[in-house]
Length: 113
Image (cartoon, rainbow, N blue to C red; front, side):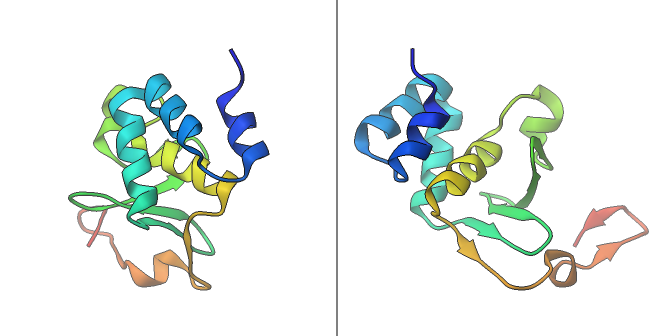
């Protein structure tokens, strides 16, 4: 079996066979990751990668994500997968500003507003 990430990097794009391989390997998480890319919901800021999800915006930093799926189940959630694919293909929205400046941090409840 070939390395999916190396294949995506080599192609530099999401071909139909690569999309099928993402879904085969990651199932529902792969489907959701591809949807995020197709809908241009992957964003790169100066400080973080952000994926706009169904209910919130999720910060992705390397192999960490702020979503409940990652926190409770671990592994690569759909947001981490979407960012990995975005990094290899260039499919993302880029902003030349700090994400933390856009989303004020509330010290009282330790959550983003």
